[in-house]
Length: 263
Image 1 (cartoon, rainbow, N blue to C red):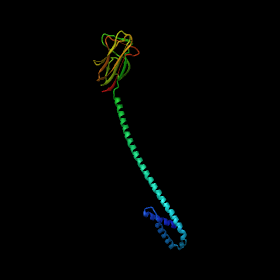
Image 2: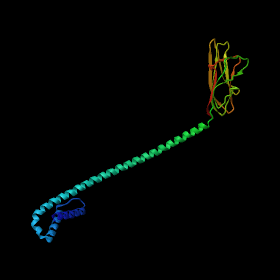
Image 3: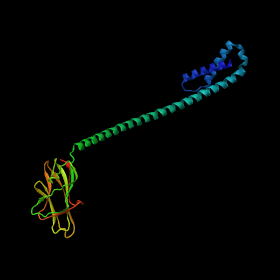
Image 4: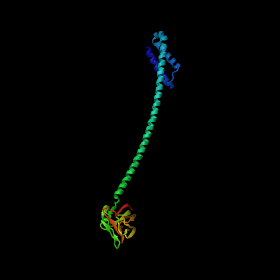
């Protein structure tokens, strides 16, 4: 019976506390609730009056303990709510970071796609660009010349002829497309009493002239040039009259060229 009364008193006090809203129990509240409980007990069971002096101190002790429990729980609840708020803030920060990462990933994906498109365009352009490159040796075995007139030099020993723009039959390079081309000519003379000499032509225009005197030993002469050619332009080499060249399997005399880029 005493325990039931105490429990009843605790719930009464809890209700009073919730109505106050400040979480604090006053002595007046406790005294008022205790008086109501005692009056109710006298009306129902008069024999409780004899035990009042022994029961009342124990009831006060238990009420204090219960009040302390309520206070502790409120403190724990407040701490838990603070932790929840901190977790909410951390979760919001994580969400913002993830959103920024998604935006960065989207931007990076866009740049990668742009680079891939550019690379594909370069591949298409390269695939559609005509490839032109040639390199030939003279194919001689000994001296050639001298002659009384300028003579077309035919370089007949093929090393490379991508695009077949150079003819080893006529010795003439024919530009397959309009563009900028690079050409290089090497000639060689060996212990001959005559000068070595050759000329490079674009159509009927002489581009450069090579000349050297062996002077009892071997001598090289070489030059190179970059030309803008229209489709169908001709480039070739002539042995200058009164000059000679020498070659063998070492391929001292060569004529080479290639397309740098179309125009």
